[in-house]
Length: 126
Image (spheres, rainbow, N blue to C red):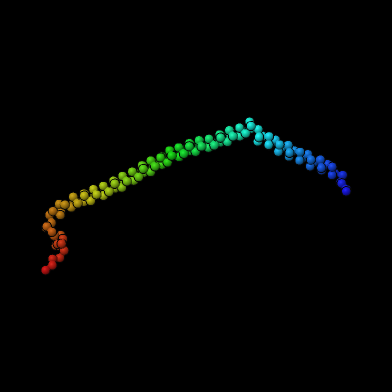
Protein backbone atom coordinates (compact mmCIF):
# COMPACT_ATOMS: atom_id res chain seq x y z
CA UNK A 1 0.00 0.00 0.00
CA UNK A 2 1.70 3.07 -1.15
CA UNK A 3 0.90 6.56 0.10
CA UNK A 4 2.07 9.72 -1.46
CA UNK A 5 4.13 12.19 0.55
CA UNK A 6 1.30 14.79 0.55
CA UNK A 7 -1.37 12.20 1.53
CA UNK A 8 -1.26 13.02 5.29
CA UNK A 9 -1.64 16.78 4.52
CA UNK A 10 -4.68 16.09 2.33
CA UNK A 11 -6.23 13.93 5.06
CA UNK A 12 -5.60 16.67 7.66
CA UNK A 13 -7.22 19.24 5.36
CA UNK A 14 -10.27 16.96 4.88
CA UNK A 15 -10.54 16.46 8.62
CA UNK A 16 -10.31 20.22 9.24
CA UNK A 17 -12.97 20.93 6.57
CA UNK A 18 -15.30 18.28 8.05
CA UNK A 19 -14.72 19.68 11.55
CA UNK A 20 -15.64 23.20 10.31
CA UNK A 21 -18.80 21.90 8.59
CA UNK A 22 -19.82 20.02 11.76
CA UNK A 23 -19.22 23.13 13.87
CA UNK A 24 -21.45 25.19 11.54
CA UNK A 25 -24.18 22.52 11.66
CA UNK A 26 -24.05 22.35 15.47
CA UNK A 27 -24.23 26.15 15.71
CA UNK A 28 -27.31 26.16 13.46
CA UNK A 29 -28.98 23.44 15.50
CA UNK A 30 -28.22 25.31 18.73
CA UNK A 31 -29.66 28.50 17.24
CA UNK A 32 -32.82 26.74 16.06
CA UNK A 33 -33.42 25.00 19.39
CA UNK A 34 -32.65 27.98 21.62
CA UNK A 35 -35.90 29.11 23.28
CA UNK A 36 -34.78 32.74 23.13
CA UNK A 37 -33.96 32.52 19.42
CA UNK A 38 -37.22 30.65 18.72
CA UNK A 39 -39.20 33.41 20.44
CA UNK A 40 -37.25 36.05 18.54
CA UNK A 41 -37.96 34.38 15.16
CA UNK A 42 -41.64 33.95 16.01
CA UNK A 43 -41.86 37.61 17.05
CA UNK A 44 -40.22 38.69 13.78
CA UNK A 45 -42.62 36.57 11.72
CA UNK A 46 -45.59 38.10 13.55
CA UNK A 47 -44.24 41.60 12.91
CA UNK A 48 -44.00 40.78 9.21
CA UNK A 49 -47.54 39.38 9.13
CA UNK A 50 -49.01 42.31 11.03
CA UNK A 51 -47.00 44.80 8.98
CA UNK A 52 -48.22 43.18 5.75
CA UNK A 53 -51.82 43.26 6.98
CA UNK A 54 -51.39 46.89 8.02
CA UNK A 55 -50.07 47.78 4.58
CA UNK A 56 -52.93 45.95 2.86
CA UNK A 57 -55.44 47.84 4.99
CA UNK A 58 -53.72 51.16 4.39
CA UNK A 59 -53.28 50.37 0.73
CA UNK A 60 -56.91 49.25 0.50
CA UNK A 61 -58.12 52.43 2.19
CA UNK A 62 -55.98 54.53 -0.10
CA UNK A 63 -57.21 52.55 -3.08
CA UNK A 64 -60.85 53.03 -2.02
CA UNK A 65 -60.22 56.72 -1.58
CA UNK A 66 -58.68 56.99 -5.04
CA UNK A 67 -61.50 54.91 -6.51
CA UNK A 68 -64.05 57.30 -4.96
CA UNK A 69 -62.15 60.26 -6.42
CA UNK A 70 -62.13 58.62 -9.82
CA UNK A 71 -65.87 57.96 -9.65
CA UNK A 72 -66.40 61.59 -8.69
CA UNK A 73 -64.34 62.71 -11.69
CA UNK A 74 -66.34 60.46 -14.00
CA UNK A 75 -69.61 61.75 -12.58
CA UNK A 76 -68.45 65.34 -13.02
CA UNK A 77 -67.45 64.67 -16.63
CA UNK A 78 -70.73 62.89 -17.29
CA UNK A 79 -72.75 65.81 -15.88
CA UNK A 80 -70.68 68.27 -17.90
CA UNK A 81 -71.16 66.23 -21.07
CA UNK A 82 -74.88 65.72 -20.48
CA UNK A 83 -75.42 69.40 -19.73
CA UNK A 84 -73.54 70.26 -22.91
CA UNK A 85 -75.81 67.97 -24.92
CA UNK A 86 -78.88 69.42 -23.22
CA UNK A 87 -77.72 72.96 -23.95
CA UNK A 88 -77.16 72.05 -27.60
CA UNK A 89 -80.64 70.51 -27.79
CA UNK A 90 -82.15 73.65 -26.28
CA UNK A 91 -80.22 75.86 -28.72
CA UNK A 92 -81.38 73.72 -31.61
CA UNK A 93 -85.00 73.81 -30.41
CA UNK A 94 -84.80 77.57 -29.87
CA UNK A 95 -83.44 78.02 -33.37
CA UNK A 96 -86.29 76.00 -34.82
CA UNK A 97 -88.84 77.93 -32.75
CA UNK A 98 -87.27 81.20 -33.87
CA UNK A 99 -87.45 80.13 -37.51
CA UNK A 100 -91.06 79.04 -37.09
CA UNK A 101 -91.91 82.35 -35.41
CA UNK A 102 -90.35 84.22 -38.33
CA UNK A 103 -92.31 82.16 -40.82
CA UNK A 104 -95.61 82.45 -38.94
CA UNK A 105 -96.61 85.85 -40.38
CA UNK A 106 -95.92 84.60 -43.92
CA UNK A 107 -97.87 81.41 -43.36
CA UNK A 108 -100.80 83.36 -41.96
CA UNK A 109 -101.11 85.49 -45.09
CA UNK A 110 -101.23 82.52 -47.49
CA UNK A 111 -104.56 81.07 -48.49
CA UNK A 112 -105.76 78.41 -46.16
CA UNK A 113 -104.75 74.90 -47.13
CA UNK A 114 -102.80 75.98 -50.22
CA UNK A 115 -99.18 76.69 -50.78
CA UNK A 116 -98.16 78.15 -54.07
CA UNK A 117 -101.10 76.51 -55.87
CA UNK A 118 -100.77 73.09 -54.27
CA UNK A 119 -103.02 71.51 -51.76
CA UNK A 120 -101.50 70.16 -48.55
CA UNK A 121 -103.62 67.07 -48.81
CA UNK A 122 -102.33 66.30 -52.25
CA UNK A 123 -104.24 66.09 -55.54
CA UNK A 124 -108.00 65.95 -55.38
CA UNK A 125 -109.50 62.69 -56.54
CA UNK A 126 -112.73 62.57 -58.46
